[in-house]
Length: 386
Image 1 (cartoon, rainbow, N blue to C red):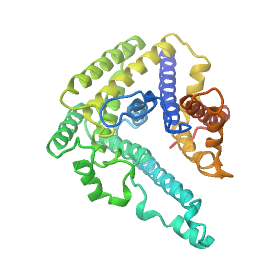
Image 2: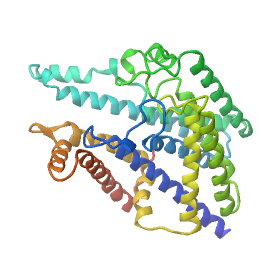
Image 3: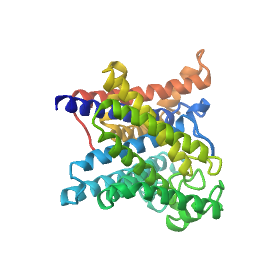
Image 4: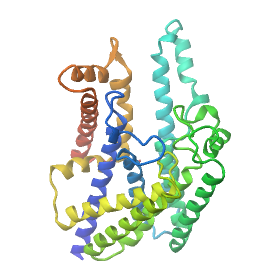
């Protein structure tokens, strides 16, 4: 009994560390010092896969596993407390994403030099009144939607049917892509057409068509989370730690190879969240989790490296939101003619550092700034649940 409890705690630690790695990775790739970026730290332009394309799907895969763990205590039977928890978390993630989108537009408008001739009242009105072109979807809304739907499915559908549901979603999505120009990187894509029809032209991602977190691509993203749920149910119910690790390696390898093989018919694309992208990233995520479980649980290897990522892992979404909020003082508000980010980058690039090294150095520094705040929360045992 004692061994089982210890293994459970270590398993959770491995999940926290992997979750922390994904959050640190997301902050790193989202906040370069300039547009000079090494290729592995950029997303694939449309088709293909880079290391940067792995961090968000890894987090969603882990969310599927932790959804199983969190709902297991309810024995997958509906209750008011369970329904309230699911609804609260799903809506909170969505509305925080909407607020962040509005806040960035508000700040950009307030510092927009074209409004210098306007009065403070007029500037405030223009800056506040941006709801007609706020982006409705995004990273946090996608997390909220996929978590909420995955949790409802997990509570309402017999678990043996969920793999079939995943397969059905993938097949339907591929048919939609094939029959309605879904692979096109322009406004003729069915994904872009649906986004425009449902969300409206003012509420989609402004810098790319179709929206990378659009309406239709939410379907395979939901299936992605459900893969994590199924893996969590199967692997975490195995009794021995060795069996858990072996099965994680086996399933991870099968998912990865299946995704790459099927890519001959359905290209791997994060921005479309194709089924092959989901299979490959779930498989690679599970392989990474297997390695971490072997290192942390089996070998009991814990040092400053695991502690570093644990700080991000125990407050993952709170620190991700914080990294967005800190963009305002560091990357948007100017001291004189430059932001703090630009001043640091210029100072670094003016030395022997190349532009790309200077940009990466700022990104690493920004991760450390967020980690420092997370470490204070960690030491005080403050865990913010989103």
